[in-house]
Image (cartoon, rainbow, N blue to C red; front, top):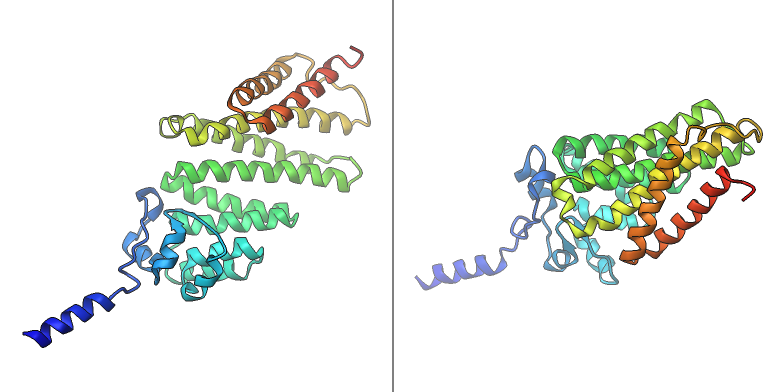
Length: 288
């Protein structure tokens, strides 16, 4: 009995396999094959497990030290890609999911999201748009509202930045093709607004800042569109705010952001909203 008991104890003590250190998967992120995905995402070492908390990861000086032991884990590869700012590790993570046939889960969608962030950072806004669109489709299908909200915001900002960059490169001249991206950006922000005000996220205080930020971006879109439309006419006054409906809506967005942000201590948003209220007032009353 003693030899058998000894073997059993050794098996238990040494049996920390990849499958024993489980990576917790929220139901709305797991996708079609949670068990298979669980196996791929499980950590080999306890050190790695300590650095990750569900879908959020913590990066510190210890991270690169343990990363080599987890080189086949797509979560670790995704995190490394954030650190080095290169696509190499992100490509590896994407390939692992695709080889396993696991492309309908939030972890894979977050890899696509990060491709969007990468290309946006490089100024390739249309390439970023493709990846954001793909990630949005997956998050939406899974009902992962938290991930969807974040991605809709980044996708909207990407298109907003594209229009700004395009106009600057064209000497502040604008084309209908370029301006056509603004309605899509607005759609993204409106969809995010609905999600942020849904029952699931409305009670979550972590999203209070996001709600104010979302209103700021919506107001900015209306203001930007007026500027772009009138710059296209080489300085004519135009009448985008002529009926004051859009003016009032834009003003209400910025007023709301300023009021809430000031009370909550979101001073960056309060400051930017105050500036845009001044710009808006100047547009309507240029000689006041």
